[in-house]
Image 1 (tube, rainbow, N blue to C red):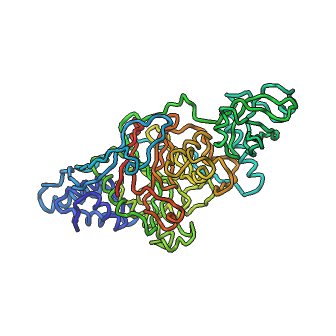
Image 2: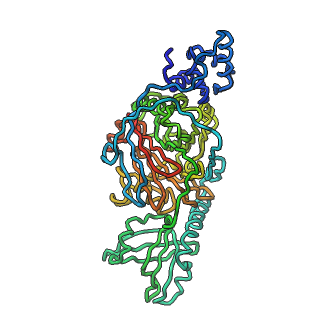
Image 3: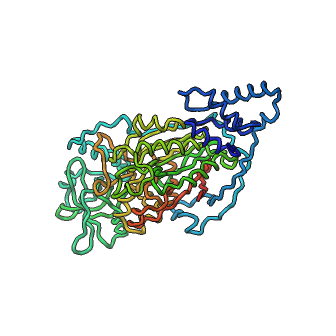
Length: 527
């Protein structure tokens, strides 16, 4: 059994059903007979223990040393992998509200670097910090009753109106009805309807807890260019003048909840990196297993030693019955076997990398958002790496840097509803900017978007994240919007027949790497 690289050791142990600690891999690789050391370590690890621990390997080495009467070669951890990984790198800060970047291979904006990693990654697990907030798991109370939907949208209005009322002098709708013509007034309301008049002006109905009031944005106003960004069910604020008959508000200014222009992101106080990926789609015939193995191999190298976190934004597996005739494109038919296969691939990731996962629309959880995390049966299947599994969406704070993880189904809705220059598949960061602007990850109810009727709206972006991480659309894109780093991380699945039929050309096997101390981004490609 050849064991030339640390990654091969990890895969060999995964074949026996074990994960392994990072230092244990180094000790096995540096042994005079790595295969014998590995076999002895597996034999010494209890059947109910999913991780081969460093102490077990060290004891096996000591036993071997006593048997041979020599310690030669057992204490050298500096074993070169001998592997080469080609990466596309983009470094340096992205300007605020820039167009961002598409894949380097299509934009030509990134230099291609041939890297030759030497040695093994040597990560310290001391002093790490990881917290999760906003997880719906175990908190779902909705029954589907009408009252639940009322509670949901009232909570949405309350949360978003608080973000807007400091900028306008809000008057309730029933108060506006009694104000004399010519009065200046403002309203914070949820958009009930948007339509155009015969003269090309824009008429909106805004609703608050007291009723509904019409507002008019004339086509000659500068703010008219933003009307095409307005969606039903989102919360906005307007200022203007009451008409002479008191029946309408002529709008002078329009406000979205927005990211404050003064926002400054938090950064880590040490050099540490996170890899952001999504849409692995294990079980599909088009899952790029070789590319995944190259990624996992690279994570074991010294070049990747600063990567201490791996954030996966949904769609671990291909699932079953997600789209028409999907069964014809499956390599693994049973969804539980798909998760078992995914778990085996996950074991190739270094054991000292902290993994955080949220579900997506292909995963075996409810489709309505917010989505709770995987159930206990699936958690048990994926337990070997001890990943942190949370709901969709969730705010994950690592090393003080907050990352809003959201799979991204609403991106389809944004792209369908908004003008192409403001939201499209080739630049997925643009619809992400719109979600940040609206301070809600799924502002429009209906269409393809399924919304769970909870008593609280878990999809509101209450706190501004430092990083916004999504997937779903299988396209790579990133940029900064008012200092929030937005990243859509592509996928690990080549184009399927279904994707071809709907004109989706995926960006495959990219891994955005974020320096948490600077929020610089490096894009690596493994195919």
